[in-house]
Image (spheres, rainbow, N blue to C red):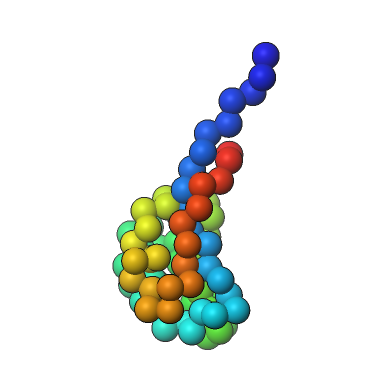
Length: 70
């Protein structure tokens, strides 16, 4: 019997272009995003529910919501 995997949505940040403005941090309902060392946003995958609010708010458009298998 083949094991079934669920697909979930998660946020991913392109760290090379993130300007660490913190807009994503303010809108995340699960507090899954933080600005790391004042350099870039970082997503806690355990907390992220993939709602997309951070991606919509990002002025640099560097956050993307992707499906991942769990």
